[in-house]
Amino acid sequence: MLPVLLMVMGLFIGLFTPRDVRPDAFLATAMVSAAALLPLWGTVLVGVGSCTVFVGLMVDFHALQDATAYSELATLAAIAAFSVFFNRLLGRRAHQLVQVRSVAEAAQLAVLHPVPRHLGAVTLESLYLAAAAEARIGGDLYEAIRTQHGVRLLIGDVRGKGLLAIQTAATLLSAFREAAHDAPDLPHLACRLETSMSRDASRYPGVPGSEIAERFITALLAEIPDDEPVVRTVTCGHPPPLLLHRGEVRELRPAAPSPPLNLGMPVSGGYHVDLAPFHPADQLLLYTDGVTETRDRSGAFYPLAERIRSWSGEAPHQLLDHLHRDLIAYSGGELDDDIAVLVAWRRSSH
Image 1 (tube, rainbow, N blue to C red):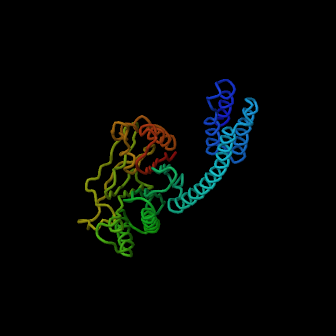
Image 2 (cartoon, rainbow, N blue to C red; image 1 turned 90 degrees about the vertical axis):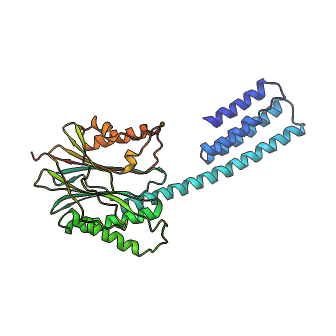
């Protein structure tokens, strides 16, 4: 309604103010705003309407012989023509943006497959938020696979952004999807992932200090066996998961964390497995550092464990809905980093 309102204001100013107060500015603004807000037909109608209003005012004030009035009318006609051109340009840009977003969505889905809702006795829910909403693509990743050893989970965060991060994430996910079925335990699985990432990085020799040479991944591996009420985890430089048990929230800090994958640092003594109880109705929350590094306007970090406690009794999808809304509200709608969250809930056997 803004273009129409501006056009009506121009008409009223022309009719009810002294003649030296010109309505041109309101009419011109109406046409330019129409180019930005309305489709092509609306822009044309506002342009024709604004010029018609001005001609009507010329007739009403007997200014048909006034050269200055004709000059102003020519200016308005030129602005109307520019508005139509500007509208078409904006429409083309909007179409290109839709195409880019659709390609980004396809790329994201190709890399980050939707996680199955149910794997054995485990129910899963996931949340992914890109810092740049228009891009819908980033370097955070997660995966869940049912194997003969139980349900195996991966969550990770690739250093950097853009296509290089997506390529690295795709490599890690492909390696995990293959090795998760064959590796006898989590340390072997972590070794397989490290080997795959190192081989991939060797294909792109980079100058020391370059982005290619430094593209490491923080990762957390988890295993939920079918026949034991436990969860096993291996941490590779990643934030510790949260265990939600009967309204309590416990941070599962690793006893001996390993360095991130593809960092080029040997793991002395092998990868350490941490063991924690994981009973029916318990929930395991895996997340990337984009969650805990979300800041409010004062610069304070998001208190995940404190906030999640009040929703610990909710079902996984409801818990993530609460977390999603709370992160947006806490940051004022301005996320600085990509966010990935994976929740695993062990269902009761009854």
